[in-house]
Amino acid sequence: MTGSLSAAMLGAMNTMVSGTTLAEVAAAIGDTARANILAALMDGRALTAGELAWHAGVGAPTTSGHLARLRQAGLVAEERQGRHRYHRLAGPEVAHALEALMAVAASSPPRHRPVGPRDEALRAARTCYDHLAGRLGVGLADALQARGHVVIADGAGSLTASGERFLADTLGVDLAGRSTRPLCRTCLDWSERRPHLAGRLGAALCARCFALGWIEPTRDSRAVAVTDAGKRGFAEAFGLAF
Image (cartoon, rainbow, N blue to C red; front, side, top):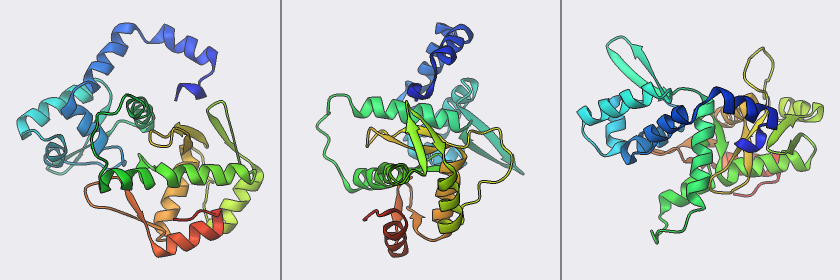
């Protein structure tokens, strides 16, 4: 993630964020139950405290305390619908930071834990907040870059005019409309160690793949399954094989 920040931006951040504040945020993440809660929210959904308790492996009262700590650190936001309360990541910047931390964790010495089907599913294709990650996400970024539709350099991304036409004509991706969110940015993929696409472009591409029926969610995981239609579509549009 830091690769997309200029030296000037990093300098400004250093003056605005104290070491104490950074340590407080890191401490909020640095608990296994809270880390599991944040990981469960990485697919962009809003979940109840009960659902998050299951993911965290702790009881409801303990989960409430963890959620309060995460809200205080600005990592999680609460939404209320009638009598129900839901919790989600505070924004895409939190997801980017968590994905970068996962990349660091993935590069640490192995703990000799056998790789299971769930691990392979996440590495193949998953959501990272509201965009696609894993081999699928990185493959899409690579294919678009190889065809000159996006330019990725120094950790940042930009969409070309040919890319905008390709996405609109081939997939029906609509990027019109005003938004303060960056159009195209990159996110370091923790499993592939290379960038996938985020920002409005990444979100729109992910949403369109769901709408086309090329991918579908899997239960209790942010892994997504590539459907038969998706295998044909990704092969024809991007030259990807699944």
